[in-house]
Length: 480
Image (cartoon, rainbow, N blue to C red; front, side, top):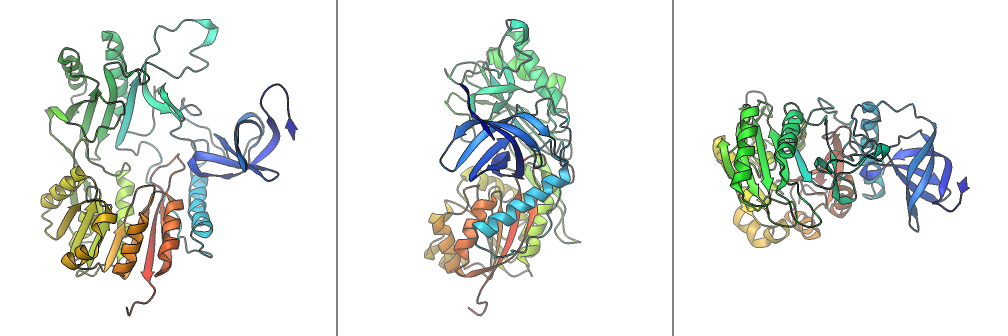
């Protein structure tokens, strides 16, 4: 099974047996688990080991002996280099199977649940061009492919506009096509690159912290609005203004054009000023009402606003959460990690009072704007970390919840939040999660007072390993 030479260890004729987390497939050799990217369960391959730990290893397939029946042909030319669509070589129905399995396995292994009731996964309405936001990076350290380096020719430049290579913070794939976001996303990205190269504008150097152009953010809504945000390292208007004008002229569909000046070492820009150059300060997204006869909900999305990146599927996600909440019209609902108040405003017409808690003040401002925009008067939003807000005095002032809806980050809920939720003893908890592992951990903690009823996985990100899951928990002793 193993060959050892002067080079790395190669494991021969190993069958891939499962699809694991982080987009890595799983093989097993003896007692050792091996994680391999860009392969499919059922493939039989030779694996070159690139990292070895005590209980597992990581490797890459260097030769295929058998191709899995679960495979399909990837359509993107960047597949295998860009890490954004690691499951694109797997048939969509098989992606759904393994995502549901990921949820079930987490609930059984981490949540300690025996045969949890996991409903069929909800497929995305479209498996391609579903995103409403893409963040591109300008870099002068392009990831060089075999085609770039052929014949020993010297490249005219190593600039790139695209996505970071996984595990290489300073390398960027020069993206020429992407199947995530609808038109004119691809054309807009290419136009920005071509203009920058023609004018000799410098691309960012993450190692040195130099270069003028840093990021290009493209956001869109389903009603055709388009927001473009250009991020530069310094406010050099002789370079900046002509580029903004060029993009605006080439793409008259841009309804909102911003720029940001980011002189920091990191790419985070939510805390920076967003300067509106042309158009409106926001785009809008609409969602159908939860119940027939209700009003559609309008969400105003600014340059720093968070909104689910698959809006069509987000509508389905929120509908499942609302169904699990079982609202009759008089309940007090706590919406933890409310973000821009999307779930809070979506369910507000069917509740007595909704209290949203979020640590990012800008998001809370957006949540309040969206409530006013929809004429919603029974939402109350508070800025702060949930573990610090949910204290006895807060419950005394605002009442204990009848229903808790929680949608935490990938790290899950803070242990103090779990304890506070259990002390509040709401009759139902609706737990929305983008990480089945931390969700299962939190459900295990909550099992002291709550019974897991069922869950519904939702495919928000086709062609990737990521899956959302909505779980319903009920208080063990309802008479309490």
